[in-house]
Amino acid sequence: MTTLRTSPSTRRRNPLRSLQSAPSLLLMSVLILYPLGALLLQIVFPDVFNYHMSWRPSFGAVRDVMGNSLDLTAIGNSFWIGCVAALVSIVVGTVTAFGGVMARGGLRSLISGSVWVIFFAPSYVIASGWVILLQQGGVMQLAFGLPSTDFTWFFSPVGLFLIMGLRYFPFAHFAMTQAIENIGPEYINAARMLGARKSQVFTRVWLRLLTPALLAGATIAFADGFGDFGLAAVITPQMQIPMVSYQIYTSLYETPVDYSSAAVLSLLVTLVTAAALILQFWWLSRRSFTTVSSSSRSSSEWPGRGSRTLIGLTLLLVCFGLVLPLGATLMQSFWKSDLGGLGWNNWTTAAYTSALSLGGAAVQALLRSGAYALVAAAVTAVLGLFVAQQMTFLKSLTSRILNTLTMATIAIPGVVLAAGFVFAWNATWLIPLHLILYETPLCLAMAYVAGHLPYTIRLQLSSLSQISPNLLTAAQTLGAKRRTVIRRIVVPLVRETVVSTVLITFTGVIFELPAATLLYPPGQPPFSVLVQQKFNSFEWSQGSALTMIGMGVVFGSYALGNFLLRRGLGGRQGGMTGAFTGTSSTVGTGAGPGMAMSADVVS
Image 1 (tube, one colour):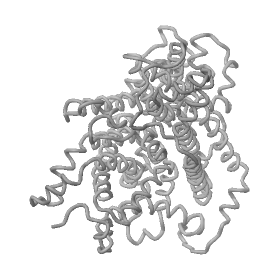
Image 2 (image 1 turned 90 degrees about the horizontal axis):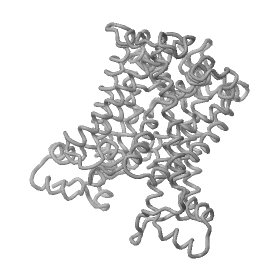
Image 3 (image 1 turned 45 degrees about the vertical axis):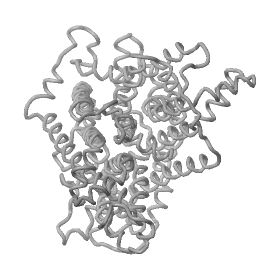
Image 4 (image 1 turned 180 degrees about the vertical axis):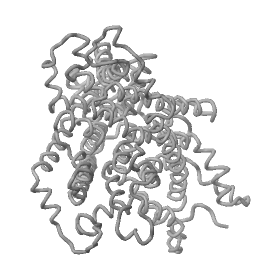
C-alpha cells in the first residue's frame, strides 16, 4: 500500500516519483517562469516580439539603457534612496518594536494594531496622503495658515526618505519584536555583572543579538523600496524624482514604446533585489546569533527608566506613519474645494455621493476589482494548497525545485512580473494559437494569481509541515484515497491558514497597482487604477473619497477574517493576525505578504 511518505532509498529506486509533482511545476512555469523567461528573451533577442519576428541576438538594449541619462538617474535614485529609506525604516522599526514590547494592555494592542494597518495600507495611498497633507494649498497650510514655502523640503529626496521610512518600518518592527522577546534576561544580567553601562548593554548586547532581525527588516525595506511601483507612481509626477520602477512603466506606455529598455530595467531591479538578499545570507552565515535554548526565558523587566519616553516616542512615530497621511486623506475627502479652508461651508459629502452612485465609474471599478479579488483569492487558495501538499508529502527533485522557485519569486517586484506578462501574453507566436491574452480580464486575473501564489504556498507549507505523517498514513491504511485524505484530514487542519491566505489575496488585489496599471483591459480600469487616475489629475477630493471607501472594504474584510477565525472556524487564539504570526493554533501558522518574505530571509 502506498503511503504519502517513503524512505530515501525508496525514492531513489523510483525515478518517476518526480513526475507526481509535475502538475505543480507546470502550473508555476505557466504563471511565473514563462513571463520571466519572456522578459529575458526580450533582452537578448530584441525583435522576437515584433510582428516580423527575428531571433537575431543583440545586446543593444543594455547599451541603450546604460547610455540613457534618465534611466541611469532613475537607477541611481532608486538605489541610494532605497538605502537611506532602509536605514530610516530600521531606526523607526527598532524604536517601535522596543516601545511595543514595553507597552502593556490596551496600549500595546493599539501600537500593534496601528503597525498592522500601516503594513496593509498600499504604499501609494500613504504617499498620496502625505502629498495631500503638505502640498501647496494642502491640509497643513489651510489648517495652520502656514506659507507654502515651509513645506518645499518635502518635495525633495528628504521628503521621500520620510515617506519610505514611515511606510516600510513595519517590516523591521515585526522582525524585531519577535527577536526582542526571544532574548532572555541572562544576557543582559551577564553584561551588567561585568560592569557594562546601559549604553554598552544596548550597543554591544541588544544590537548584536538583534542583527538578523535588523538585516531582515533592512533588506526587505530596501527591496520593497527599490522596486515599489506604487510609491513611484505618486512620487515621480508630484516630485519630479525619476525612479526605476516608474521608468519601466513609461518605457511600456509612453510614445515611442521601448520594450527592450523595460526588459533591461526589470532584470536590473530583480538582480539588485536578489543581490541584497544574498548579501544578507552571507553576512548571517559568518557567525551564530542563537538566543533561544532550553534554558532561555522571556524577559518581563526592561533596563532603564525611560520606558515611558520610548512608548511615547513610539506612539508619535505611529501617528506620523498612519494618522497624519490617512487623516489628511479623510479630511480632503469631505472638502468642496482646496481653497475653501476649514470653514463649515467647505465641508460636504459630495465626493462620496458621486463615488457611490449606482452605475457610476467608481462603483463599477470597485465591483470589477471585487470580482477579480474573489476569483484570485479562491484560485490562489486552491492552487496554493495543491502545490504545498505536493511539496510537503511528495519529496522529490521536482519538490526541491518548486521550493527554490517559490522562495525566489517572492523577491521579484510586482512591476517586474507584470512587465513579464506584457511580453509573454502578447507574443507573435501566440497569434496562430489564438492565445493573445494581453489586455484581457483573464490575463489580469492570471497576473493577480501569479503575484500572490508564492506567498500562499509558503504560508501553506508552514502549516502542512506541522501535520504528522502518521495521521495520513493511518488514514490510507484504513483504505482512504489520497483525495479523501486531503479533504477529510489536511484541509480541516489547515483551514485557518487557508482562510488567511484567501483574505490576504482578496485585500491585496483590491489596491494592487502594478499589474492593474500595465494589464487592465481598455475601458475597464480596476479600482486602484481609478484611484490613481483621480490623484494624477489633481481631483484630490474624489481620489480621497475612493481611497477611504477602498480602505473600508479592506479593513471590513480583515474584520470578517478575524471573526471567521475566532468564532466561525473555531480559532483558538489570535484570529487573522495570529495566523500571520504563527499563534492562532497548533497548525495554523504563517506570515503576511511581507512577513512571509521575512521568514524566508531569516531562515
